[in-house]
Image (cartoon, rainbow, N blue to C red; front, side):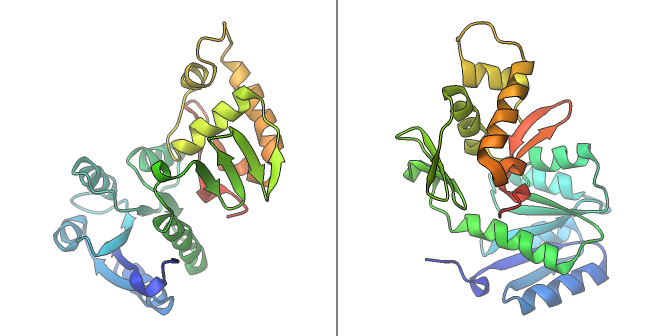
Length: 235
C-alpha cells in the first residue's frame, strides 16, 4: 500500500526562523504533518516515533546537525535524515552520508527540490525489507539475486560476473563508500592479482550498460565509489 503524505510527520530542525516557517508552510501544503525545532537540543526533546523524517540543518549553535545525527545513529534510531546546509564541499557530503544521512540539500534551495528529495526518501519507507525479497530495485532497474541477472525496464542487461558483483555490492550498501581495494576484495575475491585501476575500467563499462542509471554510481575522489538513488536522473 502506498504511503500517503498525510501519514508522514516531518521534524524540521533549523536555527533560522524564516527557513523553518517556509518549510513548514510549503510542506504542510503538500499534505505532510510538520513540527519544527530551533536547535538540535530542542529537536532531541520532541523527536518521537511518530516522526518519519528529519530535515536537519548542519550548522547550528550548540549541538550541530552532524553531531545530532551521530548521536541518533549510535542510539539505534534509524529515522531517515535529509541534511540542510550552506556548506556543500565534498568532505561535508562524505560526512553526511557516513553518519547515515539519506540525502544532502545545499542552501539556498528551492521548495520544489526539497519536496522532490522528500518524496524520494518517503518512497523508500514503503519499500519491503531487502531481506524479504530476492529483488533489489530502483525504479525499473532490477537485480534478481536468485538468477544473478539485471534488467532495466523489463529488458535483460548482460553483465559479466565481475560487473554484477560490483553493482550488487554497491546497491546492497546504498550510501556506503567502498575503496577500490575493498571492491577488489569483495567483487573479485581470490581471482588472481588485479590492479586497483581495473576497478575504474569495470565501473566505466558498467555505467555504459546501465545507461540512464549511470549517475547512480558516484565516484568520491580519493575515497572510492558508492551507489545513491538520490543522484539518479531517472528517480
